[in-house]
Image 1 (tube, rainbow, N blue to C red):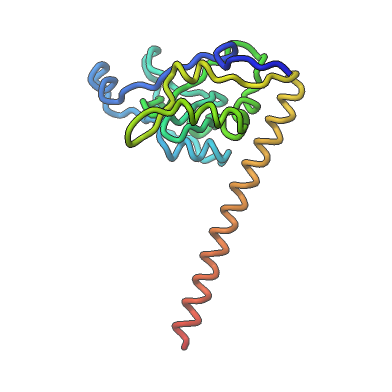
Image 2 (cartoon, helix red, strand yellow):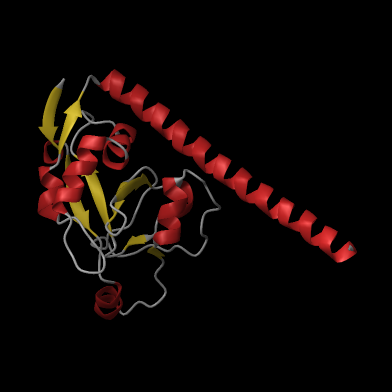
Length: 191
């Protein structure tokens, strides 16, 4: 198994400052990729596409379905789903541009979000006061294990299924808690 720098496979594109974009292009009705959109993509929960997403200038970073983004505040990565395509990437996020198909996107998500060695590397590089972030230079220096692409696809696919299942279980737990609370409240009202 080889170990290589992430920068051999991807380049990082920082998000844009919403205030600067609105002033520069005199546009107020832009829809930005936000934390709620990231959570939706992270848990692979597709919502309905936003009908209000409009075309933007070509030098504004807009997202496409299948793009990989990193939440700078959470130090987690997610793949953009259909419902968040067309949104503008804000400063809180970084987009990955894959240079080739030598690194599977879902395998990268597993490595960046869960692989212990990468987690330790990220923790060493965190900077900031209130909100800890990983500098762009440090992202480029992350070293990851590279296996054959077929194995990457298998691991990435299994990781996606685990995250999807975890999200569904969490949703079931919330529904169960809500149901139990309603039963208890009804019981207490009757007595």
